[in-house]
Image 1 (cartoon, rainbow over the protein chains, first blue to last red):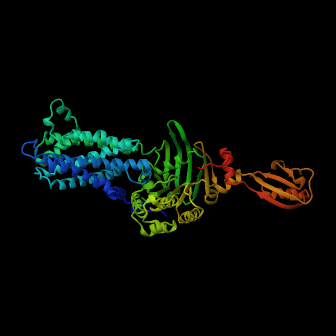
Image 2 (image 1 turned 90 degrees about the horizontal axis):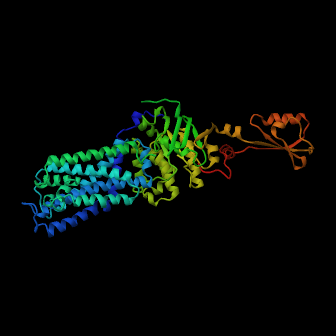
Length: 262
Length: 313
């Protein structure tokens, strides 16, 4: 059964297979992975769009619904990108299924890319559906759609990396939910989803500028409605830098096999 | 990159410790292409650590592992492509059905799905009625069968079976070993550990025994058993003897049954024929002969110093 390995080994097939498996995985539990976050975002949209949206305006020239929609879209992207990598990888570690991958020719870069792309797809799918639902309540000017898309991709990439890191360090499912409840959600809520940080009194306004999610949310909103608290350069620069740091961290952990290989 | 190495696996000075405690202490062995090689030892002997280092689940402490001429660190993608592993623990992905998981698994190895080969594995392992069940719904035995199919789906050249028959019924065990022999005849090299030493004795061309991280024996199975076993020869005599005939001291002779039975423990270098010839020359009338040879299990216990039965590897 001697084989000519070059004939029988397709080096990129492991990557595409893992990507396909990760997409199938969240597709198989779509009620939990897609429908639930969309319903949650829909409820936010109903509260802030249909009830308060037309009656409030905290940024001149825009209704409150128009202001809050980009933040809600970004919230869906962030939460779901993080949830996808963190839950998938942690479950593999916890249930032992990771061994099935460790014995295969899936390389560390392919591993990261497959997990990341699947998480980005889930995050961007949820974000897109939230945006579609939001059109029932308000329309956005889409000042710079390319930059908006880039910021959405950057956010999903960043939180896919963070999900990988969290899954590697986590000791239990509780740890994963703690990341969501005590870190991501407070940072999202305090990062300007529901209000512009410029209306905060000092020192809260300054503190808010230390929140990395502020730059993602503000940059995305800036691209969608043409108004933001900070410039594109700062929003993309800061977010891009953080995404690179998280990527290098995740790549180092996975390349080393930290807590994956004994 | 066509490789024509004689050895399927070469392990040199393999060492691994966990938290400063050595688990594998400079182990060396080679597995020849096309052989069935048994790696045995009691719990904590270092077998699973060795196997996991070969498979890539555990990082190497030091030393080297070469599979079919490829270094398993530098050329890990090639070596893993050529290896199939049936893990000791049940490892499954609960999200998928048997059919979906088998199709996916070939792809992880960079191998295109081969429907004929997949169907053969499904048929031989009795998975056909369960193809569209999700893993959670499978019984323990079925999960074990699925794991074997999964390890073979990419047609590995070296199949590592780490206790594949643990918790498996007798029928499947027999059909599994028949299948393993069949793929071995077709050229697949087999490395196995098993709880059932009689299976190892029956299946393996060569056997290595590990204990406390060291390799304490490595020989052809029959040679290992022959060299280390206590062969007993029981001679039933026509006339009872009052004293032990001379010249048999090396066989630790004993008279039993009121002198009607002469019990000899034959060392490995003395054959039965020469003993019988010597006794015949002394005019001894032999009515019946019984021989007894210890099994691999007894050799295993003798080598590992275990009392109270054999522990699972």
